[in-house]
Image (cartoon, rainbow, N blue to C red; front, side, top):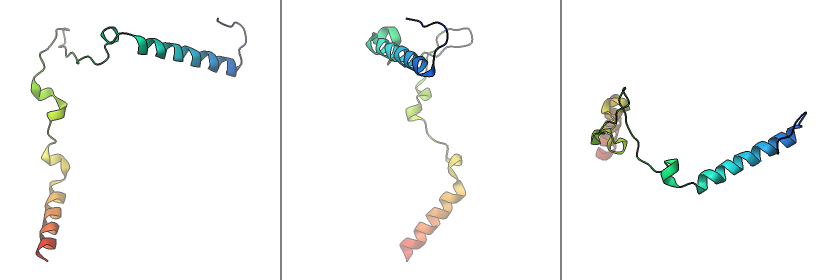
Length: 87
């Protein structure tokens, strides 16, 4: 029921909160096939055609480049570890 005229802040925040809760319940009860929850990502080109995604695009198998992690710091750390092991 929509209120008309002046509405105080408490009524407005209550109305918004109840609307958000109703939408959340609706999305939770929705079929995953309809909402797309858990679906695979679809990659498309500029024309909108689906692309076959190579395995190299998989981010879980992606390697961090060695140059991005401070080569000099790594070398110094290895030198310190060797000095500690020799002592």
